[in-house]
Length: 117
Image (cartoon, one colour):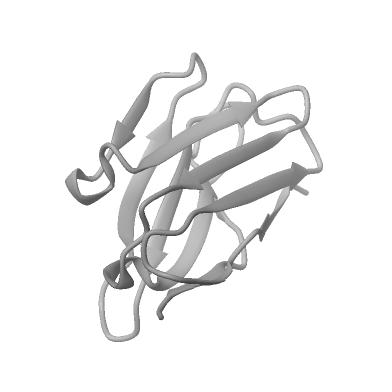
């Protein structure tokens, strides 16, 4: 059974940086597209960044130029480097294995990011 565990969230001042990690266990995820989402109370979960199996990336417009998604297939881990953070980036951040190669969509438990002075 594949599980995802996010880490790296916390409280940071505006303009600061955080790096989120998403570690997979149970089997390799190198063939799967991996996504980072975020959600604030009362709103739908929003796709922030996505990385394909060959490293191609996509970002929501608000993250372009500030966030970088990457993956280390040897470590079975996906990262989200977040720079120049803004209060509106405050949310719970979730990683997701996109269904494929015998796996369904799988979500992690989320990690809270709070950007505040």
